[in-house]
Structure formats: structure tokens, C-alpha cells
Image 1 (cartoon, one colour):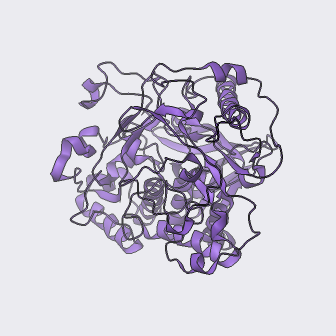
Image 2: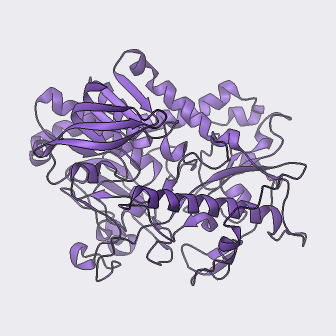
Image 3: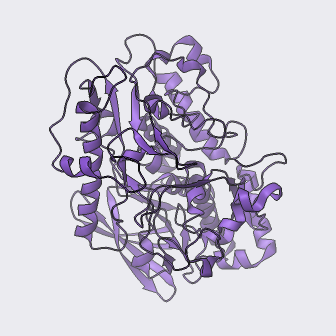
Amino acid sequence: MELRTQVLVVGGGLGGVAAALGAARHGAEVVLTEEFAWLGGQSTSQAVPPDEHPWIEDFGCTASYRRFRDGIRDYYRRNYPLKAAARQKSDLNPGAGWVSKLCHEPRVGVAVLDEMLAPYVSGGKIRILLEHRPVACEMDGDAIRAVTVEDLRTGDRTVIAADYVLDATETGDLLPLSGTEYVTGFESSAETGEPSAPAQAQPDNVQALSICFAVDHVEGDHTIDKPAQYDHWRSVRPDFWGGNLLSWTAPHPRTLEITERHFEPNPGDQALSVFADQSLNPGDGNLWTFRRIAAKDLFEPGTYGSDITLVNWPSIDYFEEHVLDVDEDVAAARLADARQLSLSMFYWMQTEAPRPDGGHGWPGLRLRPDVMGTEDGLAMAPYHREGRRIRALETIREQDVSLAIRGDQGSRRYPDSVGVGMYRIDLHPSTGGDNYIDVGSAPFEIPLGALIPQRVTNLLAAAKNIGTTHITNGCYRLHPVEWNIGEVAGVLAATSLTDRTTPHEVHGTPALVDQLQSRLVADGVELHWPDGVYGY
């Protein structure tokens, strides 16, 4: 089958959905493809509660991202039997998790995104192809003429021709298919000038990926069959870990001190009073409440038999090998190993994990495949913290955002800023053997040039594949930043069509940058941080 559209968005994560919405809002016809059965990426198929900065309730994100957040709370109020005090709370946190001010079940995120897309889908402006992955690109000089996607259910292929192609995949899948220049792993200090970079480039040194899962704790024995690789993962002891990988022990990300975590299901805490602020408290003292996505005490009795918590903890970080630019069967085998690691951690929790009462194991822990939308109870999609990154017109470097380097002057200001973001430079253990790198950053801006490849004329980066480095990817990869990036890419593609210009021309012409920025501001995109906001 062949399709023709104005804007093709490949990848339906947060960046991809925001890109489709931004392009359609400005009049473009859009085809949006996604590899998995759910749109939403980090928030849904990967099941990662939003990683956000402490000012997110008031400023520091786009208006459409705020509508997504507000929509989640509204969905709970409309559809769930919340207790009166929880229903009335303007900053309702349904999971009362300490990692985020808005911990929620993945399916709610899916429902809200579907609501946001619905008028454009019904109006014929956006066409969505779920469970489709890109397999080829047809080039015309320095432009992509068409992308071929494969239906993972039937094997059927569709060729989609488009004026603009936006790569919103989790790992920059279109970059090798189109021959677009890109980077993987850790750049050298000679290339980037970053003080924390190695002397020699390490393209195979990539942050850990994770296969998350949701659990509750109820009566009965819900112990799963012993995973095939359990004995292997039970014996793994990384040099810098301070013990077995399957344990409550791990390095503290910020200090690297070996830390023993606490785990207590359904602690009966004051869920309504949880105040999530990563700048004040990392919140991982009790792993149960750290990424909790449903706090049963916020709902009428009988709604939930238990809290539901999301396991995205150090012990499920898979950093033995990466999955970029290797044969498909090799990548599939490594992802299978990562799934075995997650199942092994869960089995260890059920059978061997030390309990506060001196016993071992919680057999009442139960996987929640219904919450994950899968048969095995693991997340539908892997959580890729790092993928391929375009060689862009502008590369964001450590010295542009690092709090230790920038100090009181704040992050670098960009004349072509198209958004803002804030998160610590948070790098998980990597396939090159690195420990955590978790250091402060200053509230930063997103330069337009980071979304535009150096050579290919009609491709835009619309997710975590923008022009960052291995280091700065650690703060530009989070939920509201990915959304902002995607939204801008969609608006830029659509308005380039109506204005009969190109992204490269826009970037190179101050008057056109000003025009784009005015449109973005009208759409509710913040270009700069207010005074008095400092990093952490």
C-alpha cells in the first residue's frame, strides 16, 4: 500500500504525539506511526511516571503538555471513585509517588492522549498506524522521499511519501535508514570540549535500558515460575555496586555511596500529604512509594485491594550490552536478557528479598499484566534512556547546562530558543562500565538548531534524538522536554509548508526565527525561564 501525506511522524511516544498535534494544529495533514499498541512512550507503553522539575505545576512546560497533565487528573476525577479530599486536591497525585507530582497508571495516559488526538483523527487531519515500525527509507538526494513501515501483526508493508519526516522513535531508528549522520555513545572531550567526557570517543558506551513492571501485594502465593536466567542474574555483582545486582543495595546516584534501600508494601502512609520534589528529596527511601502509581487510600474503600507500584529501580537497569546498530537477532536477544533481568528481580523479591521482620520474600507480590497491557506483566516497550542522536546544526554540551560550570549565570541562552526544560544531568550505569553520573544542571533552553540535521533537508528530530551529547542527553531526555521538542518539530514542519520555506532557511534567518518563536508563544510554548529560578 502507498500513502501520501504532508507530515509523517514516525514514533508515537510523547514527542511523536506532540509533533502530530502541533503539525495538525497548524493545518498539516499527518500520518503518525507507532511500533507498539499504545501511544505515549515513556508515560504509557514504557510505564515510566513523569520525570519533571519542581515548578511544573506553575510554569516550565508547553500549554499542550499542561493539557495532557490536566487531562490525566480530570480523567481520574471523571472515572474513578476518589475520596472527597483527593478529588478536591488541585494537584492530585493519584499514585502519591515520591518521584513525580503526577504518578498515574499507563492506561490513563493512553486514554488522555486519545482524547487529545480525537478531533484531528475524526476530521481526517491525523491518521494513526499502530504496531508499525520503519524498515526502509527512499532518498532523493539529501531529502527523504518516503518511509516504508511494516505492520508487525501481518507483515504487510506501506510506503508513506511525505514532504516532511519527523523521527520521534525511541532510538532514532530513521537515522541509519536514511543515512542521516548521527552519534551514539560517549563523545570524546576533543570533539565536545566537555570536562567530563573521555579522551577517546566510546560509541558503544550507552546508558542502561530498563524493562519496567507494575506490582501489587495481596493475600495468597503469587510466586512466578523461576525465570530461566535467574541463577545468572542472581550471581551478577558489578564492581561498583557494593553487592549483588538483585538486592536492595545500589550506589546512590548523586554521591555513589553504597546505599541500602527499604521496601515495605502498602505502608499505610499519608498518601494525600506526599509532596514530590526531587530538588528536596529523591524520595527513594521506601521503594514501594517511590514510583507508586495507584495509592489505594486516595480512593473509596474496595476500589483497590492494594497500592500498585512501578518497578523502575537500579536493579533492573540492563547495562551488559546495548541494542543500537547490531543485527536484529542480536538486539532481540539482548532485549530478552533485559526482560529476564526484570523477571529475575521480581522472583527474587517474591522468594529471597530480606523483609523488615527478618523473613525473606513477599509471595503476595503480584505482577499486573492488566495494568501493563501485556501477557507477562512486563512493560509493553523497553525504556530506552539513550539512542542515536543527530549531528545537528547546534549541539548542546555539558558546559552549556552544568550547574557546576555555569553557576549563577544559568544555562546558555539561545537566540533561537524554542522551549525550556529542567532536570539534573542523570546518567544511569552504562554499557561501557560507568557508574552513575548524576550532577546538577541549570534550567535550560532548547535551541532550534538542535532539532535540525546538518545535511538532510526534510528530516527533523522530534524526541530524544536531538543534538545533545551523551552527557546532556541525561537532562534533555525527560517527559516534558521530549514533548516540547516534538511539538516544535511538528509546528516547524507545518509552517515550513505554508510559508514555502525550509527548516534550514528558518534557522539561518533571524526574521524567520522570530516568526516561528511568535507562533510558538501564541501556542503556549515558553521560550525562556523567569528570573529567580535556579538549578539543583
